Image (tube, rainbow, N blue to C red; front, top):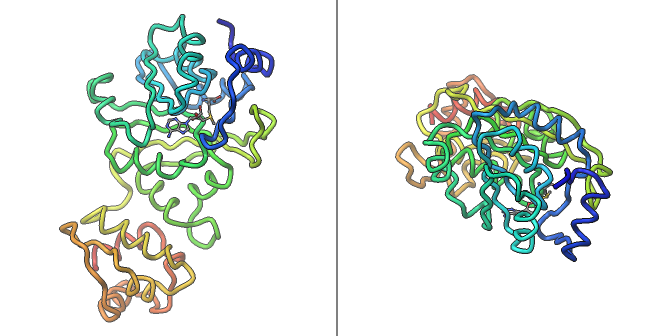
Length: 292
Ligand code: SAM
């Protein structure tokens, strides 16, 4: 099977199988070999690696992954793509295709089964409608991971990298930067996909920290504070937290905050009582969470 990463080869497969693109699955297939090579290179795939690919489509990126990695597990939701993948990946004996919704797959279990629990690499041209739940799921479910190299909507890549003082800064920025070091690899124009998406795309690599950059007493508590702060980002941190009904304490139980305890913590940190959550760094959120 020839490489699929050209407009002609992709169009031929689409025609051969009378495949209909499903917008609801975020199907925009890569048709540019240069971009694929750069993704594989920046993901630093070696012959030792077990790679999990989310949404292989017709197998365009899977071909490259299979040639570089020891083992590839590709999870695709669209059952109409499974016979196509069985054809396009026929000659690769190190690829397992799973017809499932990635949000329902036990990825930690897969890493255990396929890689003896050692860290896997995730590489994907993601379906944009579920980018955040996929990334958060990978981090929060404690999948053993060394890196995630993914194509995402450009705006989402921007959000992952910024700090306080920009409009893109939010819960996703803090979560990503708590778990990993984000690095922009490249921007990718719509013309590199079939069909063309309505937005610009970027490839970003998230290298998982072995130790988080801040020490905290409870991740659940920290992230409940961050979520509450950004749910009402135009409000002061005091008001956002007092209004929240979903804060979590050190033992994982739900709790509500009183105005005076939030003010006390801000005083101890030397921060103004009128500060907004969007002005706090990850280190400050961590300190706030530990004192709260
Ligand atoms: N990897 C291919 C490529 O680069 O050409 C296709 C990428 S396309 C942007 C996203 C792929 O994810 C599609 O094949 C789509 O069917 C699949 N997909 C969408 N939602 C999914 C889900 N919940 N679980 C697994 N795959 C999904």
